Amino acid sequence: MTSHKSLDLISPMQVMAREAGSLLMEYFHQHVKIEYKGDVDLVTVADRKSEALILEKIRGHFPKHDVMGEEGTRIETGSEYKWYVDPLDGTTNFAHGYPVFCVSLAVERRGQRVAGVIYDPTRDEMFVAELGSGAHLNGQAIHVSAIANLGECLIGTGFPSQKRHKNPNIYFYHQLTLRTHGVRRAGSAALDLCNVASGRYEGFWEFNLNPWDTAAGVLIVEEAGGKVTDFYGGEFQIASRETLASNGLVHAALLHEFQEIFAGHGVEELPSPVGYAKDRKL
Ligand code: IPD
Ligand code: CA
Ligand code: CA
Image (cartoon, rainbow, N blue to C red; front, side, top):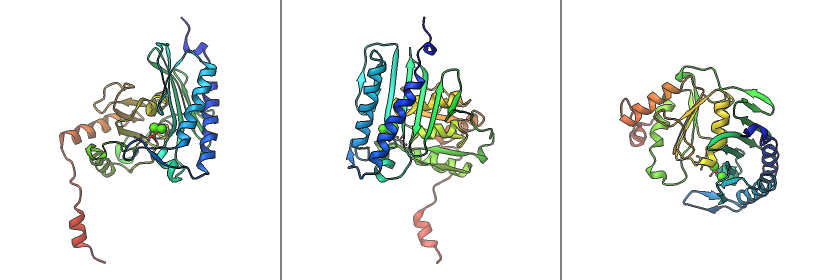
């Protein structure tokens, strides 16, 4: 049996991510037309061109590997290797000229994540992880943060781009904002996971992410010493619609908050804007 280590995935993955990142930057400096996949689910020519470039490179290096890409690539032959490709994570930011986006590539072998690469072309930051070899940022080892008290944490989250009115995340946003140093909503789930891996955030959660959003970032967090589960502490599954990542030290505290919120216990009421408008003094 060959191990994934005998196959050099990480070098070609980094080359592909860097090339796709350069392509994204060329489009970023132009004014790209926004198209819609759903009400607020945006896509641009850059998403499609980036996926086409990555797919061509994967087929060139690894013609027998399976591939799932956000913009429609589905190659399913039963290969033991499967790629997850998000050619542009942070499309809404990209389309508005807000420089927070990346390319995310992951490879599974027999259902186990073995390699992940996330490249942020705006900062030239290359996050890399291989199963059992740790996580690195531009060649330097990275580790999750050492903060163990929820009250001292900076956390990230995101809101789904589909069926937003049905999602309860605003309550989680409110509660966690009151119990931490703050909650950021930067608009790229893959970079949010890298922020946990590199100790910039202590935690991150999001409802309804897809495999191409999470596959690379979850491995990078785990290899940096962090933890990723569903919202009840169960093992993270690639098809899971729940992602809760942390430095490990505050995971139990975050899970406790989630259970309390789901049970409706101790949930602070959202202040009334009507009351505010009535009482405001200028
Ligand atoms: C989105 C981003 C965003 C998250 C959305 C994702 P996309 O990915 O990761 O942060 O909140 O749920 O769909 O569409 O820009 O690749
Ligand atoms: Ca994405
Ligand atoms: Ca995308």
